Image (cartoon, rainbow, N blue to C red; front, side, top):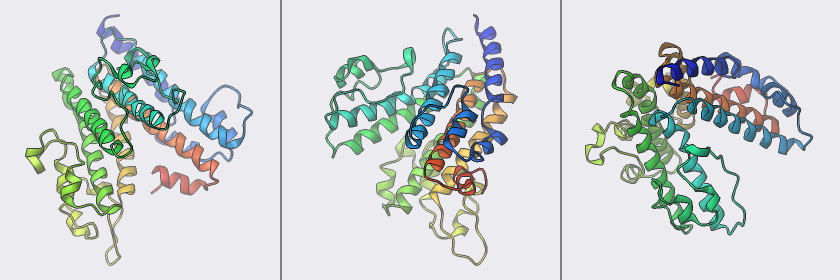
Length: 337
C-alpha cells in the first residue's frame, strides 16, 4: 500500500476507533458505573473474569493498556515506513519497560517483569532476559548495559527520561515540512509543559533550589537557559513565587493553573496543572485529528487522545477499587473542575 492509500485507510480506521472510545464527552460514563464488573462490561466486549475485585481492577488497567498499544501497532503496520515521530511515541514503552527490568534485576527477580511488548517496533530484545547488556545491545539504549545500584537508580532514570524526551522532540523535525508545524504544536507543547510540571513538583513538594531543579530539566541546549526551546518555560516559572498569583497571571499557560480568588490564599498546584495539561492536550489533539486528515498529525493526535482515555480508565478502576465516589473521581480525572 502506497503512503497516500495507507494514510486514507489509517484515517478511516482511526476515526472508527475514536468514535467508540471513551474520550471527550463519553469519558464521563466511565465514572458513572458502580462496580468494577460494570466497568469491565462498559469498556470490553468479552465476559467479566471471575476474580476478586482487587485483581479485576488490575486486569482492567492491563487489558486497556494492551488494547491501546495493539491498536496503535496495527495502525503503524499499514505503513511500509512509519513516521519516526509515531515510532518515538510508541517506543516510550521501551523506556518504561527498561526501568521495570532494571528494578527487577536489582531485586534479584527470576522472571521477566510484566512488560508492554511493542513487537517489531521495539528497540530492545526482551527474549535475552536476564542479560541487561543483551537486552539493550545495538539499540539507542545500549549504554544501559549494567544494573545500577539503588543509589545510582535516580541518575539512570533521569538519563532515560532525558533521552526519551529529546528523541521525541527531534523526531518531530523528521516530519515532512508541510506537516511539521501542526505536529510540533502538539508534541513540543506537551514536552515543554512536562518540564514545567516536573520543575514545579521539585520546587513545591521537595523544596529544591532553582539551581538543583535546572539540573533535572531536559534542555535542547542548556547554555540557552530561559531561551531554550524545550526547557525555557520551565526555567521561566522558577522565577515566579509559588504563592504569589500576580507573578503567574501573565504567563502564557496561566489558563491551566488552579483558580485564583481575590483575597484568598493561593499557591500553585502542580497536580492541578498536570491534570489541566492532560485535558488541554486531549482537546487540542481532537481538533488536530479532524482538521489534519491524511497527515502525520493523525497518528500523533490519536495516540494522545487514547492516552487520555487510558488515563481515565485507570482512574475509574482505581477509584472503584478504593471506593472513591463519582464526583471525586471525575475531579481527579479533570472532567469536572
